[in-house]
Image (cartoon, rainbow, N blue to C red; front, top):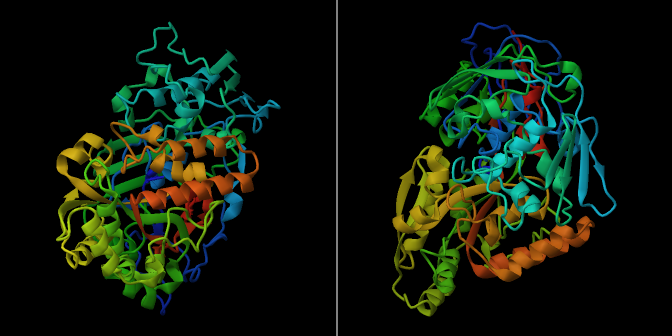
Length: 590
């Protein structure tokens, strides 16, 4: 997930952990001031009070939950969004056949029925999944949600030329040959021509997979599997006002400025055991000043950092010393890294020179050190994924210092003994990423690699670094990014990053454009494997080959210092959302 993911995605996708605020002045460890005038608890819940457990449990409804963020979404369209915080926020206005359980920690990774009556009936060969929809599930105008709405929403994933971005797992699994052209080019009268999904009646939906995939249910829990009603589909403009199937609907949206959601009075809580829907209103304010955002959170103007990337360096010391009771410091499941597009730096030895010359300790420090930044990462699988090997350190990064001798050997081998010039691409609204780019830039100078930094608009990720053509035209030899698992498996983490079949012309996440037949083939084997341990061994092999290709320089297994408001109720971190707070469960003290 970049995110996201992260996007994603995921993804990446990204993005990650929520930060909350509001508060009343107390002794050390208490809150900041309460400018909203709302009444709230007199003391903070305590350090790490919401890590894998619930802080301030309550079922009280009412009030306005106020988010603030320094990063806009890549898209609010459920089929297009890939940032992690978008997937979390999308639970307010989207539903899926199955979704993640509303529980803290690892319990959140359990899939439970959402729109469906159960988790599906699966054939013995793993190729057919059949679901029945619940009674009483409706759109925001009261019309029933049908199986055809779900099929149509999923079909939109194929329309990458119109609504680019978002995860394409379902496209790869249901139509590996790419025969379907998407609903906007569909010649069938009902625009429901995808053969792999059948809707024999409005309450039944059947998926027929050409090849079994052990993670298919995980894919159906993504926002990309949300229903979309044909008569409400505005194509590329759908992201401006998605039509709600969840407990809240969009009242207003001004891109890069604000969002307002209000209750969807057609949503029936009896059909939804996942979303608490406690606040009466939900608002989001966007700002370009991350430091100012942190201050306004601590002062109580807002409740949460929607991007969930943690308190910045300027406010970190104050928060830890004066308001530690409002702080959580969880693992996020994200890896922060640099990636090297092969179209710009095609020579593997040149890429190895960058990896060897990088100062991993300096990069960790730039990201906030062990507590605020995370542990040094040495390869591209996070600890929670089967197949991860913490001892795999092919470039000696755990030593913390650059290996200048090996860097110079690699430069000589690539025909650039005196170094070369390249460009580092980094999002302009992520101070921590800019600091990371500057750290890397400084390290590379020691071996003659001249890396200029080009900052781009983070909200335009899918059309800039997500466009292989733009990347090549701009000469982006190094891209600073991060990624969290779309779902907890090697497929859910690695495939969008390194499988050549996932390379897209827009909304791409395989920035290196790695397209190795051996890697792709290992994925094919792993996806069919029903034993997680055996699949993990295959993902371990993939990870080794990715390291050998020298297309990634991992920095850290990310941790964040996140702010939690005393005004918030039902606050807990969820592994299903990469250690971020579960937004759909949050309430506020009025």
